[in-house]
Image 1 (cartoon, one colour):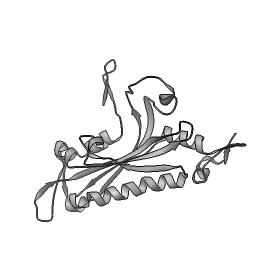
Image 2 (image 1 turned 90 degrees about the horizontal axis):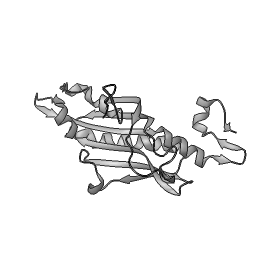
Image 3 (image 1 turned 90 degrees about the vertical axis):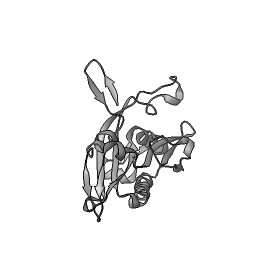
Image 4 (image 1 turned 60 degrees about the vertical axis):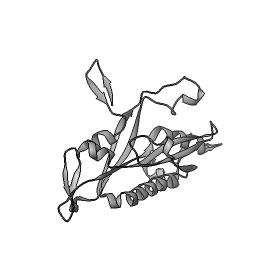
Length: 204
């Protein structure tokens, strides 16, 4: 989180922060699982680096909207849940018909909180490179240990739950991907899956 000293307020980098903390000091039961949460919030970043062509416009923003998905699972189910979350993001990108790839991060690229992470990248035709658009992670007990998020199994034994989270696409880069990949001589075609929301098929 980022502290705004003048107003004594805090800005969140992702909805994962407040959603995960909903379960602080909780004792769950076996019947509570699985727990699925979704949050749509503004997200804030303190971006570092030079102001060049690779960081202009929609690529690097200090504030943007994002939908976040968070799951709390029993340990034996968490990796199956991770696979379900990966398929969910894949379905979104397939529906938008954007060129994408999935990277399974190696140990050296993982953040110290995650046990396993998949990054989703969309190809930028304007920049001729891949840009991260989503990330899905299993944190196992790293977060739950600090949250004191536990559950009682059927035998009454107390265990730490597993937490997972993923971004269901960072919206500015989705928009950039649509603008770049749907250009036609007549204008920018609206992806078919979005027409029922926009009410029009072309952006002139």
